[in-house]
Length: 126
Image 1 (cartoon, one colour):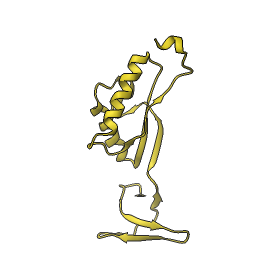
Image 2 (cartoon, one colour):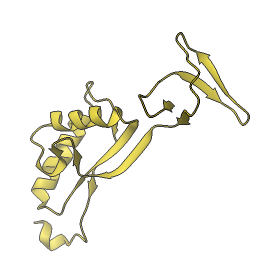
Image 3 (cartoon, helix red, strand yellow):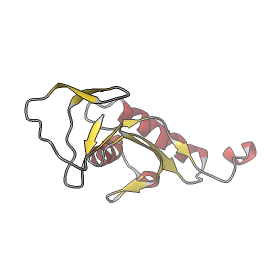
Image 4 (spheres, helix red, strand yellow):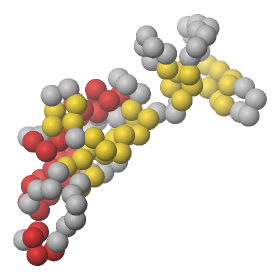
């Protein structure tokens, strides 16, 4: 879970019940009115951020960079999204996403790849 305010995220361990949130362990807890408690966000459709375009990534490091940027905004999981491309380009992006997803350097999880397109026709994939 993440504690979110407009200034900076604050992370801690806690248990949420129907009636209250109970802090399990916290060394430097500060009471801050107006703070929201939320689970991490999941971005299911994103083409890029911060100068990284999923469609033109050159290595898994580009997706690891995206995972770091997203984690700074409480996104814990995301799906890199492509545009309609030839199958070899889509396969290349999927392979890079796989290697980024198992990287020890990633911060937000990569749940898969969203292959965007109006439709896929088998004959056009060759």
